[in-house]
Structures are given as structure tokens and as C-alpha cells.
Length: 634
Image 1 (cartoon, rainbow, N blue to C red):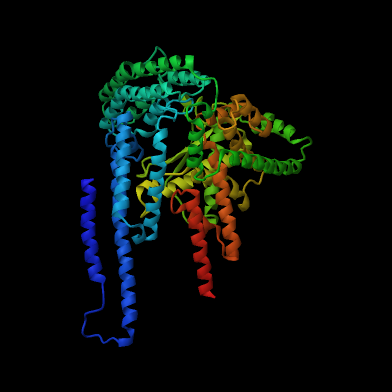
Image 2 (cartoon, rainbow, N blue to C red):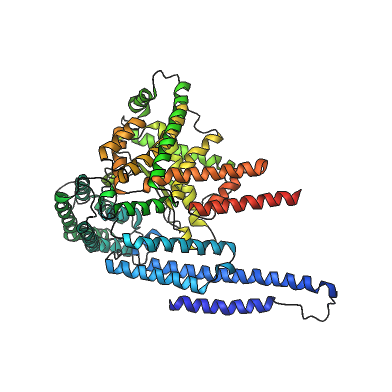
């Protein structure tokens, strides 16, 4: 904090100088001003001084925001690597309770400093927004501190048993011998990192914060996959981490003997340090499985109902109750079913909607299950994104600079990974944005959903939103790298929808796929609240999706397993999408012919992620400015 205060002191002195330079009446004696203009001149000068003061205050608080952000990044080697930096490159984060408590105290001290040092009324508009968002985030953090042990440390879908290899493979660049040695250091240190997480999981477990019993076998299998292959056994195939390390070292322009040394050291670290750590995890999973709960929803953990309400509020950024969300989901399912029936009539299908669902699940024309099907899927998904890229100027004024790639999910994590997801680019350009498609079972990746999925994960969806957010100028880093699920996933789902207004989805089956994915998100409102509020079983949730969606059974089971371990998260998509669309149509109605969707998208994207209530305020302010400009031009 010393550095921060020193910088602010210097900026305060600069502010004083600026105000003095711009203040008051002119003292030049060679200009005769009419007496009756003095009041107007003084008012103009006062206004200019106020604007200048606002700008200086904005610079001060933005500098402080950066200091606060950098202080947090300095405490996280993982964050440093995600940002493309190579500081603390051989280390993992400290995840002990003591470190977490210290981090919490520091964040509270930051908030106290902001509120006692800066007057939001004296800030320019953008800085006021940053102030409000920092305050919003702090309120969530303060309320959430009581729930710090309620999040599941390990699940079949996420956790350090999965993130350690994924992080090394996808984020740890090796451009030099030093980078390779840092990679080896991370292999060696992974044991302590995993042990800290295991201690946290044991503490939560002892408090009754347990994932359901069925979750443990998938976690055991995933952990075993990480330590399968060379050098862990006599296999001729390298384990995922060794294969990645070998590939990165082989690409270095160094002597072969040096490459051999590095690979040998990595093998030793894998067998002596990482393998025992994973074996300890596997043993813990087995112990906890024996006494784990049989129920599925978070309602059955201590304080579960209140925790779920907190999670719903955080994910949706609204005050909607579980019951309200459940009812919204049921209504949306009915609406989308009716739209699907219209497409069924368009293609001349005879039978009811359930018959059409069965047809879409089973007809071979919709599944690339033949040899080469995976490559074909990736190629066509890439082509869809390329075609969309050519049309973006019709829809947007602002475009991301970062590149986008379509990749297959690595085989070691296919079984536990989701259907598709996006990884944002490194801000320094060293890593592109990546749309990952899980091609483990091609029966779970119907081609009729390919178009909507590409738009959601790639452009104009997550890549468009997240890359632009990272590239914003004059916006504090905590906003450029933060996020709110309802906004981010709401934008993704909105991005599946609006291309239909520009002539995309010209194939009726692809348009059905768009509706199928929208239906999927509507059903999430029902099953998430069903599981965690209405106390549904896992099978009841699976049955609901099977009866109401065309998705394959494997897709359904995988999804329900996700919703069980991420209570509340699945509700954010549809709620966010509906609000972004509602605000757009409100703006269109009020602005009439002056409405331009490109300008609306700028309003949504060029401030970064926002809580939905804040987004509404920003859109309303934009509409009022546009109406005022129309009046002025008349």
C-alpha cells in the first residue's frame, strides 16, 4: 500500500498544478473583455476546471485500480501465466486457508481505501462505473466469505486434478531452457499444490460439504489418466504431460544433449513428485466415496438453501428466486417447443415433436461418426466462423484483434470436459483465443447444432466479447479480466440467436439446432432449480431433459452431472440472453429508424462485463443521449 499511496500523493500534487493552471479569469492586460460577459466567462472557466478535476480524479483512481489489480496478480503465479507473463514461472498458487484469509483482508482494505479516498461524484463517468463495479464485487465477496468452504474443490468436471495438466499443456509456454526448467519446477511443486487442495477438500467434507457418491469414480479415473503412460508405466505412449513437455523441448533450438537432460529431469519429477501426489488424491477420493451422501442437490449440505440463493444471485446478477427461475424455465420451454413444431412442419416431418426429437437423435445424416469425422467437424466449424467473420461489419463497429482457433479437447480430459468451451487469449498476444470442441463421442456432437455452437463459443460470441473486453483502452484491468456469468453467457446465447436476423441458419435443420440449444438453456432453468431447490434426483433431471430436448443421452447425462456440481451456474445463460434481447428491443422501439444494431452492440461490449442491472442503466443512458441528439438535429 505504500507504493499506492505515494503514487496517489504525486498525482494529487499534479492535480493541484493542473487546476491552478486552468483556473479563474485571464490576467492578461492586453485583452479588454466586456463587463457584461464576466459571469459567462467565469462559468465557462469553472466548467472547464470541473472537467479537468474530474479527469485528474479519474486518472488517480485508475492508477489505484491498476495497483490493486497488480497486487492481486503478484499473489498468483497462475494468474501471471494466464496473462502471458513469465514471472513466478515455476510456481503454483498458495491455496491454504491462511493465505485465503490474508487475501480477503487485503481486498477489504482495498475497498476501505477506495471509499475513504475517492468521491464517486467527483469522477468522470467511466471511473464512476469502475468505482460502482469495484463496490459491487466487494459486496459479493463480503457476503460470500461465509460460504468460502461450500464450493466443491474436486468434481468430475473441474478441480486441480484436471487443471494442473491442462494448465501446463495449454498455458505454460516453453521458449527457452529457463522456461523448460520452470515447467519441471511446476511438475515438482505440483504435489504441494495438490496437497493443499486436498486439505481444503477434507475440511469441507468434515463439515458436510460433499459431492454425491457417484462423482468419485469419474474423479478417480481422471486422476489415473494423468499418471498413465510413460514415464509412469511401461507404455510406449507418453503420458499427457510428458508428451507436451517433449514436444515443447523438441521445438527449442538447443543441443540434443540439453534436450535429453531436460526430458530426463521431467521424467524424474513426474515419477518422484507428481505420481505420489496423484496417488494420494486417488486414495482420498476412495476414502470419501465410502461415506459420501446419496443425494444430489446442494439443498442437502449444511446451509444449502441459503447458499443456493447466494449462488443464484451471483450467477444471474438479479434477485430472482429459485421458484421464479423455475417458472420462467417452464414458460420458455413451451415457447421454444412451439417454434420447433413450425420447423418440423417446414421440413415436412410427419409425427409429433417427440418423434422429431427421436429422428434428430438417431438419423445418421446428423452425425460424423465415420473415420475422419472429427477432422471434418473441426474443419466445418472453422469454416462457419470464417464465414461469420466476413459478415461482422454488418453487425459490429468494433472487432477483436486477437486470433481465434478451433481445437479438439485433449484426449486426457475428454471424458470429464464439457461439450464445448472457450479459452480467452493471452492479452500480450502470445496465445490465441480457443474454441474447444469435445469430440470424444461424435454421437454427442450433432451437426445440426454445429452452427449455433460455433457462434456461441467463437464469433460473434465469447471470442468477440472477451477478446474485445481485454483489448479495451482506458478501462481498469479488474474490469478487462473480470466477468459476470449472466452477461458473458447471456451474450453467448444471444450470439446464437441474432445471426438468424442476418440470413444465417438458412438450413432449417441448423435453425432447429439453434432452437435446440436455446431450449437446452431454458431447460437448465428448470433442472438446476429442480435439483437444488425442488430436491429432484439426478435421474429425475435426466428424464426431464430426455423428454423435452432432442439431445443425445450422453449429452444429457454429462450436462446433469455438471449442473449438480455447479449449483446455479446453468441459470445465467437464458436470464442474461433474455435481458440483452429485451434491452435491444426497448432501444429499437424508442429510437425507431435511428436504431443501429452496431451501435447497440458497442454499448453492450465496450464497457466490458456488467451486472444486468448496470447494463440496463447504460443502455437507457445511451438511448436518452441518442434521443437528445435527434431533438438537437431537428
